[in-house]
Image (cartoon, rainbow, N blue to C red; front, side, top):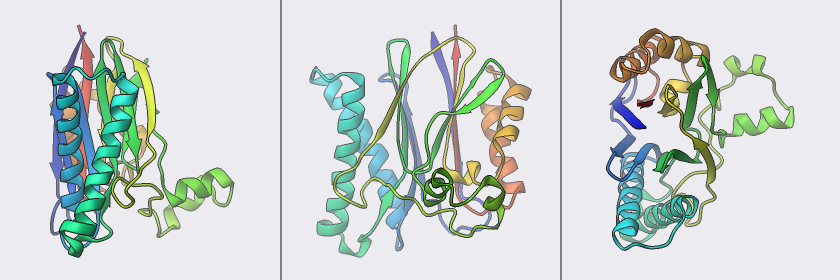
Length: 246
């Protein structure tokens, strides 16, 4: 099986700079999307450092033949990224104090994908004509929903939609969620910052994937970004699509 991959990021319509970062390395099977937070360039520094640290950690671990399983490899990569961001903002660049980032990551190991997540960026799976949100948002709103304090009907009027309860780098240590999923031909994985998922419904994301199919990952990404900007473009938006082909 092969992965057909494409990613694009856009500053949106209301932000002066783009604090999202992404990378993918098909040779080692690593795919990352990060959405930074923090004033005075803190967000863009944190997100960039997160994805670069993940890449360096995974690449170095493979080159040195360390005996990490795929799950442990991701956990340790997140820990390394969080420590580096925290140390940079507390020791090297105190003007960046308080910065952090979301980070959703996919790592291919054989015919399985391991999805790691911290924050409210998301990973979706399109399979059998249905779209599933694979990751759980680490956000204040999601905690309130789970506790029954609010309902889905309350969401449009809420103003604290961007408050996250877990991030990479705000604290030195981080807890990461890991999901393992066997790949199957025809599956489509979509990872995004909340500049997409916070502005358009999951049903529209599914419609866009169905419209273009697994052979046109570039078109899926482009239309998702266009729709996010049509919906207001309030935030930076990054969309990565990975389609499983023969």
